[in-house]
Picture 1: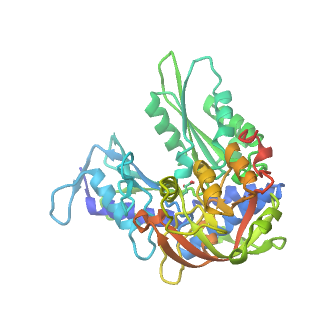
Picture 2 (picture 1 turned 90 degrees about the horizontal axis):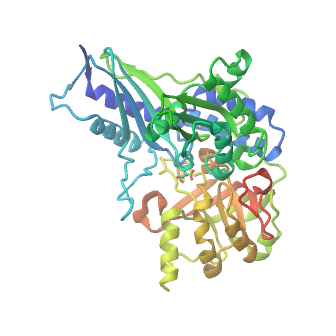
Picture 3 (picture 1 turned 45 degrees about the vertical axis):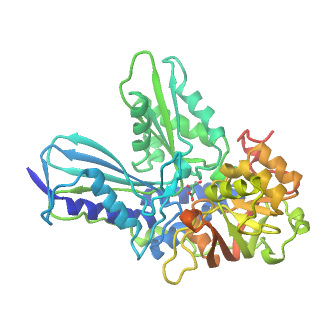
Length: 501
Ligand SMILES: O=C(O)C[C@H](O)C(=O)O
């Protein structure tokens, strides 16, 4: 029997969550660099440059890569000969309780607080749990006396785009995957990795897809040596054909949408091919450790040289400077899709829950807690600051989810423009055109870099919503690109997203 103290498991998971919050895996940084260097389409290259700078700043600054610091998932392979113990003499606790304790510890760490993204009572009050609990735990009982743990912090934007189908045995898996990509849009923050799970039952296929994501990026090596199995052949074909779709970094068009495609399979019923697809975004965060009873795990970080040659700031010499404090409709109408802007001055924030409340107040004829006239709203839920910061990492959330509120807000409040990430749907684009407004994108996943362009932050309304409260930020040269201009031209139009008529 191997004796392992439960306190060591809690400490190791908490340490892992802190580490992965600010440190990309080495293979991800290397793959992103290769994609950046090969990219010929300037907007996509600039987006990847910001992601690389962000990666460097986070590693050295020990602050989160992305404001969405993820839903915690812990995959435990528990040896049948492991015996849990406790040093504090208390009764043994469940694995779920241990994981929750670790999540609480990591996400409320005053040296690097992480964002609490989970809400309880999903069909009711949807109140934030304030410490990102509960974590999601998967356990497999294995032979032997090792306790092997995979810790993941998975961003919402990727999991939102997960897909599942049950195909007939004669159907084409490749066709099904290629058909999913356009509808997934850019909200999953490409470039990233796609996990494909094939076989088993519906829930097993999903689990296979998810777990396949957490292995090193090695598609180039596979291409060099050639496929030895049907799964490897599928990886190569999908990698090539998905990138040929031209969706590109952040959906801006370009050569690289996926850095790798992973495939995991299991036996299944003769009548079916269960198939699941789960994307992993640019904020790839996972690590593994093994406990042997000698104490908490020691986690090793990639060496600092990994980020050599990546600059510390993003320069955009062509960008137009915009003062948000004097912005008016005439200036907004002059912006053109594809133009880079550096925004300074005051911006309001608001995302899903705040939009719902604003819309409910407007529909009920009630006054709003903030005046949106001639203002710009940034779709963001920031991380809390540490001393010396105005706000923690604060990158954009997916704008598409706010499409249903565009009509109400533009028609009834005098709002001038919105900032987010990913494409807008056809109806939202028509409304932006109708109201001569604009939609701007910041790079999803470059949250720490973006937070450095925020000099002050305060909560103005809906404090109870936690990270979803309405804040006012003071910006200094905050980089954005015009994604939908007042004439209704969309930057995402030509990349096969098939969302714009
Ligand atoms: O929750 C967020 O801040 C972003 C979310 O992960 C998204 O990609 O839309």
